[in-house]
Structure formats: C-alpha cells, structure tokens
Length: 334
Figure 1 (cartoon, rainbow, N blue to C red):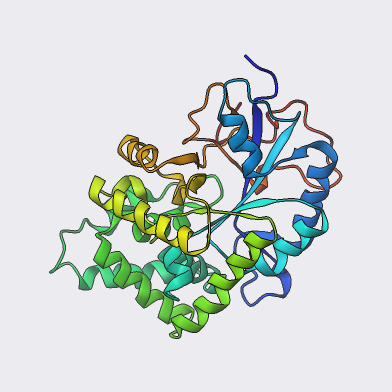
Figure 2 (cartoon, one colour):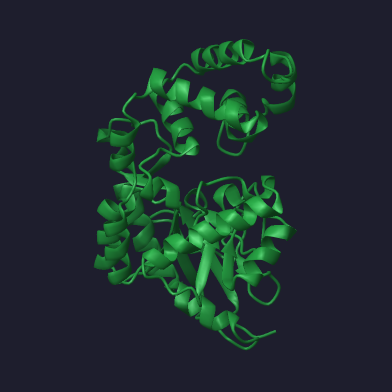
C-alpha cells in the first residue's frame, strides 16, 4: 500500500452569522466558527483541491500529502458565496461546492430546505406535527396511509443530531409519504410557518448561475448535487439517469469540465444501479455521508466518506492523534 493515500473530507451546509440572522435556529456553523475551523485546518492538515484528489485516483501510486483534507459544501447556499468564498480566498484554499440545479435555475426552494426552515421558524414541534397529521387525515381518501401511531412507532427515533419528533417530521416529509402528498404538505407547512413568496425566498437562499461561475473563476470546484435533490437510491434506473443527465447539463452550462466531474449525493443516498450509471457517464468521484476518513487504497472512488463539520475539531483543540480524526464519533470510525 502506498503511503499518502488517506484523506479527510469535511462537509458543510449553512455557514452564516446565525445569531443575527432571521432564522437563528437553523442548523449550521457560525461565521466565526468557520474561521476557527479554517485556522485549525491550516495548522494541522494539508488542504487539497478536487484536482489533487482526481490526480491521486488516476494511478495506484498516486499520493496525497500528509494529513490531506478536502473541504466540501452542499446545497448551493448563498452563504457559500457571501461568507465562505471570501474566507477561503483569504486563506488561499479551494473548496468543492455541490449545488442542486433546480434550486439555482428555477428559483424554487428545495423540499429539504423548506423542512429546515419550517423547523427553524416554529420551535414548538408539536404544533408542526399537529398540522402535518391534520393534512394526512384530509388525504386518507386519496392515499393508502398508516395511522399516526404506526408512523410514530416506525420513525420517531432520535438521530445523531435530532430528537425523535424532528426525525419524525423529516422522515415523513423527506421520503416516507408518497411524493405528491409530501410535496403538498411541505408546501402547506412552508406557507403557514415561513412565507408564501417562495421565489423571493429562493433567490435569497441560493447562489445564482453568475455566482457559481464567479466561484469557478476564483478557483473553486463545482460538482453535481443532482437536479431535484432527490434521494437517488429511491428512484428507478430511468429516474436516476435523468437526474444525472440533467445535473450534467447544468455543470456544462456553468463551464465545468465533464471529463473530470464529481458528485455529492443528496442525503448521502446511492445504490449499485446509480454507481453503474455514474461510471458510464464518466463521473470520477462520489461523496457520501458515511462518517470516517477515506483511504484511497480501499474505498470506491464513487463512495468516498465524509465527516460533518461537527466532527472536525475547533480552533484551539489539540491536533488529532492520527489521520482518521478521533472526533469522527458515533456514526462510524476509521
């Protein structure tokens, strides 16, 4: 085994001045916390870009520098242009940004983000659940639905970052209910708790095509995050191929090199049929949400693990004991 084939990949979502934002309860990293992590990364790691990773993947003896680390940013938020890009530029760092095409081009708020902001806007989750199950009761004549008690028994289990009631809301609205019904209910809750001007909210939330092109010119890498931000493993092969092709068209329109393109899976979801499609389309690397550091000698390049920002030590913390970051807790290990 060649030394220098180990890589820590870190995943970010919201990065903003949370305390002074309209939605301080949104789950994300404050600007100062991000600056602290960048400082930590520069002190204890060797930051690389996607081009360095792809170069190492091309040959079995392609090496990475010691304690190599790659920073990735999901969902195409304007935070990444307004807050992250200047900080990376100040520190001469490159990041990889996974932007879902639909959010950028159609000015619609992704269902996953509608759910984020519903939860952030209404601290009393019992009220959200009351509205959600009222909508379900109204839809029982159209859909074959289980009882509230059955959904609670199946889904209401605390997760790594969320209590049981939040997990219940997320799972119902992300994938458990029929697609048309969950979209309808999510829209209703978003109008009730957040806003009825979705287009204006979307333009504030996501980067524009011009923003993404400027990021590329600044040395950042733009990768696929699907078109609709679906759970890609929940689609049939035709749906998977359509999502991949539409996201590739988006990358092409941004001027990205489709000989060297990469994907960050929405929700970390992938399956064997999707991997076959990606290989046929020339995808070079795929990023999951499995919590551990990567080993290029053993990991499938299309299934590279990532740590969450919460797994990365903060400014002032001691250096990790080894390449694997002992802070990668609960969800996995090296």
